[in-house]
Length: 594
Image (cartoon, rainbow, N blue to C red; front, side, top):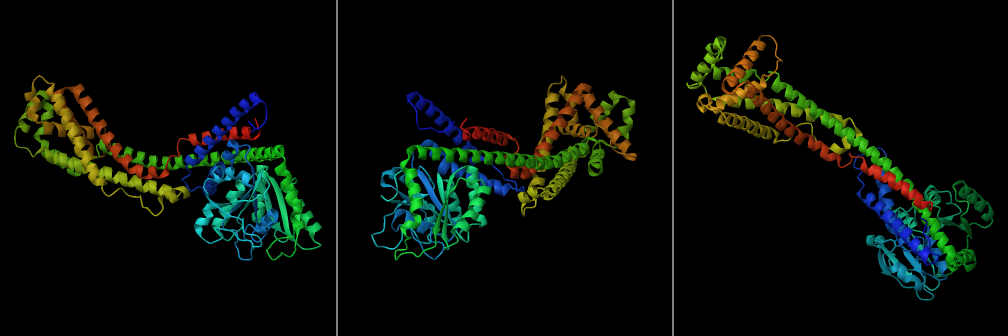
């Protein structure tokens, strides 16, 4: 799917379809990069976020505009180190003062784009570098030292691009004077990187004593990965050192995969009163640019080469981002599993406490014994269910302590169990996260080791709602009986309490003397309910009541664990990594012209 500009009508039609497919793919990649979430502070995550932002910016600034306008003029960005003489070089190529040059650093605070007047339409729009506002500049008058609009420390200047139409610039190639790549100002460095990433070709300016600096070479290596056409300008070389320095620089370029780069040497020389270099010093460079501008097929080849190389480089970045997204998924899943495990354990402990008889201690057991009696009531069980039913009916028609006391004791016991286990789960989850760098970053200074302030009240409300569920079950079951008088004689609240006690004593779990108490309690509850509703109905009612309680407990715990899970973000499904991997493969094919 290599971009093309030539061919007959049939070829042009096929080429347009290929171009449309390429643009569609690139727009899809842009959308994925925009939506990519890398919230966890894993090793390399910060670099991955920067990579994603820069890749998205390069798509906007260069790749998509170039695919959409394959015949647009080439953009040659003049970049380099602080004090390398970029602005002086641009003035020399134009043949007159255009941009500001001087000893105060940084001099290039606002990028200037020089273009032939016939190419104005390509650059006055936001076709390339759409995030930079356009400012229309004007050439200085004859004999005026090099100055330009926008050379002020105004921070807003860094978000704008000065456009200057100049007949001296060959049609088909525009020159962009970029800020220093190693500027002391962060904004300058970032803008320089952005502009170089949007270039069709580079004029990289360095000096005889700065050509081995690390920052420029990092950018040159990036240029090699993009297969961009690079011309390196070795500026201000002392007399007599030209051959030695040029040979050393050429060897470095070869080692870094830039053997084909054009190398121009500009000897150190005095500037004229207007700050201009002698024309002879830059004549070879001007001729080279002129040749490129005059060769339409050559310009198209340069555009194709840079574009394909940039897309291949983008493929590698997207592949690396897919790996970063996968790492985020794995780490997020682990953090989520840690929280889920803590609260699942809490759910299990609550279930055990509410089904093994252990809740029937203390206040709950005391209130239940007050309610049903402790002596004659239990002995009456030995005389058969018929007599038990009569005795229980008589008992409930008397003046026992109100069932609400048992309900209240059950509510207090339940609340204590649920709040305690939820607090334990929150502490456990908090500790697990603090043992993980990503988890610590998500927690920050927040303390999630306890429940939320309103949690006990939420628990109390859910328990009251559950007790209401139980009473509703009793009413519904009693309404279906032929003789309502019998179950009404026990009272809805009374039978509701019996059902709650039965739910809490369905299994064993106590030791010593408590076995007899809990076992007797279970027998009492079941016998009472079976006498009224029948054995099958009791089994069903107990199961439904149990399920209702567990559902409410689960909801309460999920609300508490959500405080942790919502901090992780949408990184758990793995689909973003899969999509990025697939797009990286498609980009590699596009970059190879497949």
